[in-house]
Length: 171
Image (cartoon, rainbow, N blue to C red; front, side, top):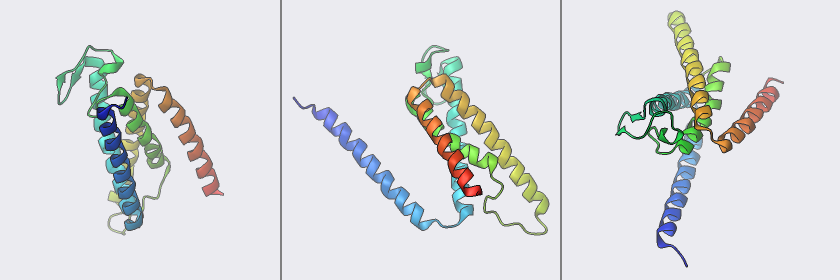
């Protein structure tokens, strides 16, 4: 027998995936400047920092910034953050780990350098690197606390791909 509630849920997921595909296709064809792309990626890191800090507060205190008391401290299931499920939290932060690694290793973000702003340019790069290192460590801690095996496997595959792509790019 068919479950009508399950069909509606599947339809919502399918529409969401289709919507994300269309948006990513649109953005990848419209945004051509490296500076704009790195700004969008950096904003994603900032959102991940908020999700990661909230997830650690959830885990260690059982308290959520928006929802209040959500569970007992030191329980993996209490780590809902703003996303709602420890599996989704670790998946989201796991997807942001390679982006944080990009900001740590890269020196060219597509920003233009002018003579009079050379000093502020240095501090801008330094701040970006510090935020990237902080977010990388935070995301890694949350992923390890969440104990999601699928994210562990996907991170291994992502870092292998990142290493191979980086090696081929440098050649």
